[in-house]
Amino acid sequence: MAANNNRSDQESDENTRLYNPYQNFEVPIKSQYLYKLPTSPEYLFTEESLKQRRSWGENLTFYTGTAYLGGSVSGATVGIFTGVKNFESGDTTKLKINRILNSSGHTGRTWGNRIGIIGLMYAGIESGVVAAMDRDDVWTSVVAGLGTGAVFRAARGVRSAAVAGALGGLAAGAVVAGKQVVKRYVPI
Image (cartoon, rainbow, N blue to C red; front, side):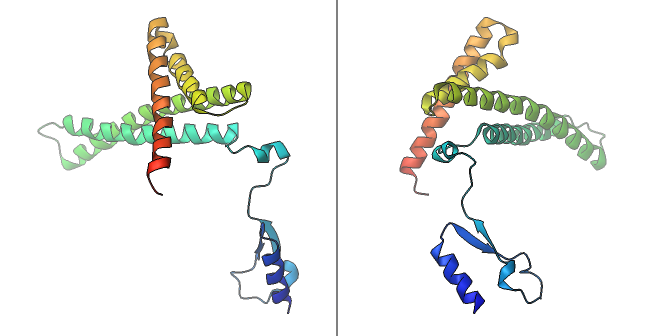
């Protein structure tokens, strides 16, 4: 009887789901041990629930992690080819594998750190621009890309920073435009 009442409660409230912490154990459970958990995120303030974007912390984690992972995989791939290119005629199989592992590990680590820092700077600048302008559109991504490129190459001089900033802005604009094209024309 209690299970029927719980099902009707669950159907009446679509924003929650029943959770039974003992569901994997072979024990009889009373209905009082079922918990109603929300199915959507809960926010402390109503302003947070109205925004349809990630928070600055989620952005920072996402961009940094994705960039580090992509850079590490790309660097490891380049390192494999470098390790194979450095083979010598008298190398044993064990030594060849060691060269490949050392080269891919070193290059993957280096590329991952560099590109991860670019993702970190991009996330920080984008979150700062969104907070300052109080809007999130294509131009915030372009400004964040421009700022990231300029800051990343600032130590090499003004000209290098300007070129890197322009390339960063173009790259960010191209990624956002490509995302819009995919959303519009590719059925997913």
